Image (cartoon, rainbow over all chains, first blue to last red; front, side, top):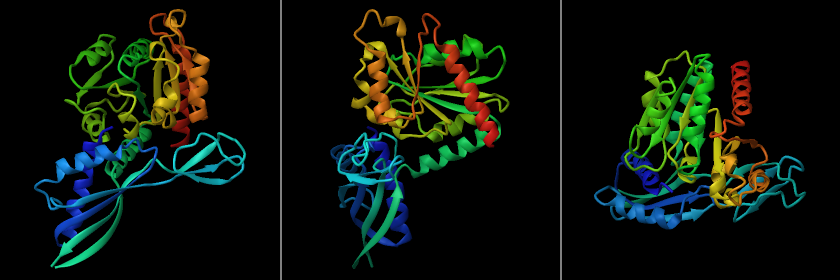
Length: 115
Length: 222
């Protein structure tokens, strides 16, 4: 996918948050990724390593945590959580459902060094 | 020195989503239906847009934004049909982003009825980026194979319309449109399915009728 452009967006937020909290350094970056986000964690890590050089997160470690895939069935209202995407409600078999979680990729938290 | 944890919970696509929402609203207010076409390269997006251009240019008002890595070729094909077209060349990026559309938008006549956006040919990355469209169409052509929806799910789960293109090739390639539609509908039961052939000029009117209905609905809800 477009991991490098996602990492560029990530660093815009990281730099902004680091300055907001007057950080000397960012030491840990935790990202959460849904199974339908289209993001490949390994590629995200490579892009992160490439991009972080000469930034405030130059020595930071990246942790990519998977998010479960959650659907809510429109037919029977059951909510189901799975590690991987499913195409029908396991409770009633209906394919008419809302994806509650699983498409997102977001910066969850940062660990900062401050004075 | 002290360590400090900061909870952020910020979407990495948040800026793109926000710009896309602004575009969607701006288009909607003017009664312009935004349509985003995505598919792998060579699935027939430009040929379909040529046919749509031929039909809609008479009653006026459409504009087309073309996305490609390089060249003006697609925009030139649309202009040759008498329709204003803007070419965005990404210089290597695999998808269009909302900010690229926002840049071009001020140059486009605000009195148009339809804005068609042809994304960079790629069945993966464009699916992750909203461009401010009201209707997203994914194209799947006969030579690509009817097994693609489940291999590239996001393009199909995030779309409103599935257009099975190049139906003139059905006698020549092992492509079952029913199977392709069934696979896609299992992923996304909301999909409206159309079958077209740009070469034979078939199935285009039904698609345009759908775009007209979608625009009417947009105006009703505005």
